[in-house]
Image (cartoon, rainbow, N blue to C red):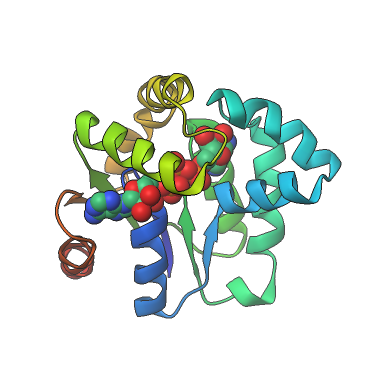
Length: 187
Ligand code: B4P
């Protein structure tokens, strides 16, 4: 089963994606986490990615696609994968569709987390105070929201055409939202 979790920054992609992957017994892959790990290790890829991430911009498609290709070709992902925070552009979505087609597979579900803008900013600022992530500052958050509307939100229509979008209201407790996501996958 190939799933994606789509939503604005702070919508709970990481939080819900991990729980849903555990429930469905598929590995979870977060491009954000992979990129942050590369930054921490100081690899050439990490050094390039950091420039974009700190400003709230997307890392170039070719960098992210290299990471995803490796994962989809791995044995761990042979039975499916939960992709958290990927794809984020129509070009990434088209590329992953082509990679899956090579495996005679397709995207089965796209879980779309719907959260108000006010709540998104509140959550990210709360995380900034707790974890100090370098892209969780007000300026970068504003850029990330703009980038989401311009480059990632068009994916909703892209996947609606494939009939795979499962819209999940993303406000409330983590447990409530997880329950809704599981229900949405049944429908
Ligand atoms: P991500 O790591 O995907 O970061 P994010 O959009 O902020 O979402 P995240 O998963 O961390 O947060 P969540 O909503 O779970 O990306 C970071 C950067 O990496 C991007 O800006 C970009 O530069 C780069 N990148 C990643 N993927 C890319 C790609 N495919 N292409 C190009 N660039 C890419 O949670 C946020 C906070 O809310 C948490 O503190 C959480 O605890 C809290 N929260 C969650 N659910 C809650 C709830 N129900 N109630 C209250 N708080 C809640």
